[in-house]
Image 1 (tube, rainbow, N blue to C red):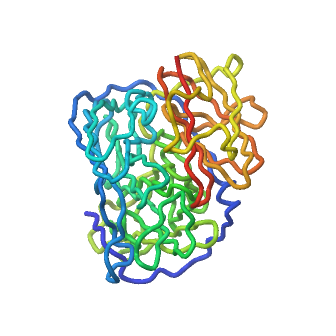
Image 2 (image 1 turned 60 degrees about the vertical axis):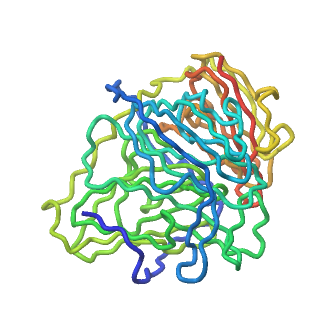
Length: 445
C-alpha cells in the first residue's frame, strides 16, 4: 500500500548544482528506443466530458484563500490503448478556449485551432480522440495570452494491453507559479515582476510518497510549467528511465538520478523503495538557479513486499513507431525560432494563413530549427513524434520526442515520418515567463 501525504519534516538541501545552460544542454540526454513488434489493441468507446472552468489551488496552505486558476478538473485521466474517446468539451471560462491534448499522434480532427475553433463562454464541442499509443500525455485548455489566471494541465495516462511488473503507477505533475502578495498568480505571457516563484507536485508544495520495502514504482514525471526547463532529482536512488514524451525507451539509468524536463515534456521512470523502514529519498527540483526540496519517497513500516528488489526491468511494450526514416529522400524545411515575424500569438492565429510547410503522407520530413532569439526556445510538434538528428545529419539519436529546447544561435535538425494526413500545429515559446506562445501549422496531404 502506498500512502500520499504532506511533508511533515524538512529535507536537508544536498549538493545539486546546475545552471540554466546546464539544464538546456542536458535536455534530451541519451535514451534508446528501438522498434517494437505490433501488439493487439484494446477496443472500446468511452464517453468523456471535460469542462474548462475556474478552479482554485492552495499555494500557501493556512495563509489565506486559494489561488484562482483555470483547469479541466482534478486528477488524472486514465484509459487503455486502442480506446476511442467520445469527448464533449465545454467552456465555462470567461474567455474563448479550446482543448489541447499534448503528445497524441495522428488525431487531426481534434487538433486545436486548425480543426476545432475556440469555444465562446458557455459553448460545447464534441469530437473523437483515438488513443493510438500507450504513454503519458497531457490535456489543457488552450487560451490566449491575455488570460486573467494561469491554466492547469491534466495528465492523460494511456495504459498498454500487456502487463508491466510494478507495484504502483504514480503521476507527478510538476507546476510552476508566479505568486503575488495577494495570493493571485500571474499567467505565463505576462511580466512576473513583484511575484514569488513557487513549484508544486500534484498541487502540493511538498509531496510525499510512502511505499513498502522493495516495492517497484513507476513514476511519470510531467513538467506542467509552460515556460521553464526544470531538473528533478531523486537523491541517492537508482532511477531508470523507461519512456520519454510518451514513447518507450530502452531502459537506462538517469545520470545522478536527475531528469531534465522541458515545458510540457514527460519522462517515465522506475524506482525501487530499497532499504530499511524509515529510509528517505529526497525529491529535489532545480530551476537553473537553485535546488530545493519538493517532497520525498519514504520506505514505510509495512512488511517488505518481497525479499529483494526486482531485477532490472525489461523495456516497456512498444507503440509500433517507424523502424526507419528515409533521410536520403526526405523533404527538408528550415524553421526560424525566436523570430516572431512569421509566427502568431494564440489570439491572432488563423488556419487560413499559409502553412509553415507541407509534406506528402508517407514521406520523411527533416526540419532545421534555428534559434535566432536571445534566449532558449522550446519547440513542440503536434501530430507526430520526431527523432533528433546527429550533427552531421547521418543518423539520429535513438529516442523519440515531441518537444525540444534549442539554445540561442543553435540549429537542431529533427526528422519524422509524415504518417497521418491532416493539419497540425507547431509551437515555440521562449524560456521566459513573459514570453508569448507562438504558433504556426503544417499540412500532411
